[in-house]
Length: 389
Image 1: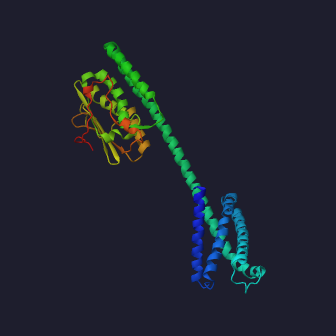
Image 2: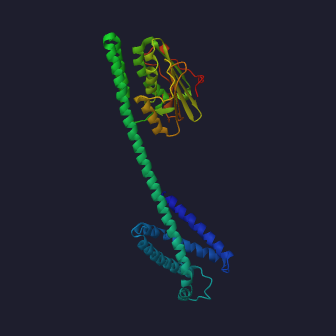
Image 3: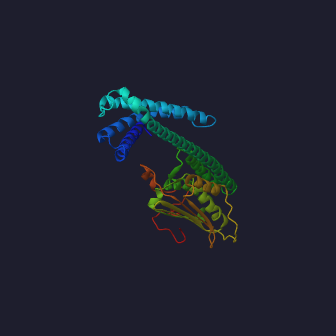
């Protein structure tokens, strides 16, 4: 809370206390006092207590109610509150007597007023001091609780960032080793294709190393990165790999975690084209519905034997699931299923959000790199296909 906000809060509390206690005084048996004097007297009294607030804050910090000195510090606080209450009472009646005091006939001098009424009003002032000290202590406890929650949030955020960095460092070598293994296999069988794959891999690595610190990027930018990977696979698989895209314009502008799609495409190729001798279609769908981004990727492939055991994921999908949990917690869904006709299907739903100003330039899907045939990719606005939720 800023200093100005604290001042406004104190002024509001002073006005509320003045009006409240004046109303109580007027409707009680003590209501024989003139309304103007009662309002003025309470305003002066609570103004003095407001000025004493810094003292109570110092009392709370200097004498905390924590073991092992809780009882000792509580006693010291009561003595200090009684002292401040006596000073407030004395100053309060001195100001009233010198400014506006309609009872001079009964109290001709200030000394007479102190001898007769000081002890009568002092217990009320001590009670007000105790209430203020309790409120200040509660305020300090609330501030300490908020500070502790902020520290816990910062630690949790730092842990999440560390986990993301660890997962990303694990994901890159995994993909690199798989690609180098593919290139090694083609070095003897098809040297020309192996050379083109090395060049494409260099482009992919340059794109990977361009880390601008952002952990989120638009789906369009993520697809551009995935195109580099798919271009390498296209060189290896040739006409056996068929790609089909259905992407809504709103979905292309949505923010997604970096390197979200490449493991999904890698899984589709591993369970599809790599296990088939004929053509294998990989279909990618993305739709931006209100507050939710839906992503679906499915591939043709051989039929899997029925099994009640949950699927065992590799490094890529396992890291993808972990990163989704870190980014979105319980606000995302991830479904992996074997298709009855063969192949697998993955569906992801995450909260929909767009980048700030300047994100529109990245919202369009660029053409794939030269390693990929232009006819292999179609991008059009379409509703999700049957079986997509």
